[in-house]
Length: 135
Image 1 (cartoon, rainbow, N blue to C red):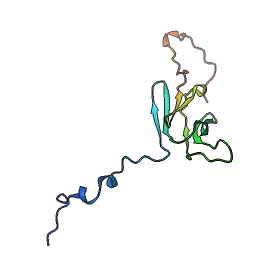
Image 2: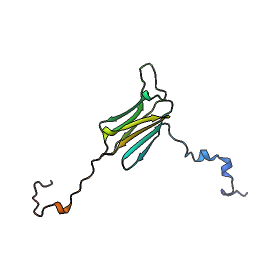
Image 3: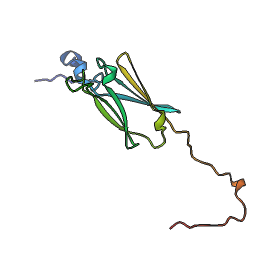
Image 4: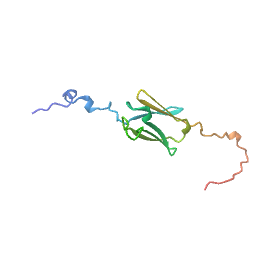
């Protein structure tokens, strides 16, 4: 008995490709993160949610929390959503902004203007006095 080689079988007709390679599946609570030279941008598709039900919070100056919350105790939000992100070290917490348009929430976290410092070797005097030593 002779078996056909796997290359000769029409696999694409036996098993649909969307079942083999489900790349187009996006989790329900997916948030897209983009890093630019001036900010970090978080965007999430949250259709059907009212603007009043969205909460964007910063916890302990380290975590960005995006979630839905009921406006009053008698109703539930149209969609349950919650994600928590650890913020990078150098961000401007006071400059965080959020907007909600056409079911897409976009949160912009600007980078801090505080940068690293640079000491020009020409500015250091020749006789540098050491005030403290590292342990």
